[in-house]
Length: 99
Length: 375
Image 1 (tube, rainbow over the protein chains, first blue to last red):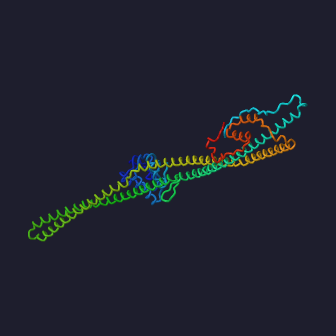
Image 2: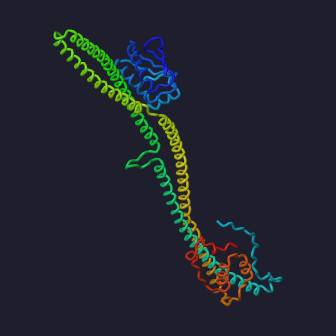
């Protein structure tokens, strides 16, 4: 997976595949997101092609940490396999999912 | 019923004595002949009336029996139609529900139940993945701690090597000092032994740390397998489930339309059959009309008998009647198409015998077409 912060530490874009192999990288991204001061954290997944259950688990951990800090985690632009996985797992009931 | 072709029949002509050319001369003889003809005709009329009354009574009886039979059959048909309607209605219930473990499930809800089951499975997978990744991150943190211990061990080994070197140098200096260095030599040996012990302990700790690192790596690999579950089948299952739910909804709607249509048709059949039963029951009125006709015929017979009796009182010589002119009767017989009726007519009207009416209704019904003579 590749990632890129969009101007500030509370907005990041993912591309490629988010799988178990990316868990160390995701930890670093999560730490950086947590260090930001914005109330809303945005993860843009529009260019993410694939996500497995480990990737979903990582997003849930990030959500849990955001809630502990009274922040909202927004998942934006999911489509293809990622969008179907979000639909299957009813992520829209757990996250703020934006088109 | 039966489509009988109506033939235009020629009128039956009576064979009466022709009028005389000179009525004044033969008036008495002519009147006598005419009177005899009238008496013969009256006799024949009475016989015909009796035959017709008997035929009508018998036919009325047949019609009544057949109507009762038909009515019973139609009532059976009405009950069957009603039962058919109920069966169709129960079919609706059967087609729309499934009994399982003493519970009734609507077919339209089965898709939702399956979807809920799939959702539960997916939720568990998700929870498992999340917990596994939490464990992975905990093991990552533990790995960092182990790495720090590794660094400490490297530092410890460096210190130990330095200590060992110092002990060796102290031993060399003690040897140079000779007897004065005896005490120093003892200390140097002790330090060297201490260094060896430390080295041995460090080796043991490194071996243990190696096992911890291997355990961490193995644990992470296990968690990777647990956390990384291929959910492609779940997505396909969800897609199939959506199609199944849609198909079930379509099937349910089509079934409802079909069953509603069947119920409507069954109700129409029931209504028509009920109407037919009611219609057949009006046969009573037909019977009453025929009874009026028979009654009228009897009255006519009595009237003719009265005229005959009055005539015989005035002219007793007419009691010995000549054989009646049967020509018009024979022509009438030719018009009868049913041999059975013709035979009874011959027996009663021509031969003057009373005949027994057959128990036709009891012997055969309309379904046994052999007894029905159409032409």
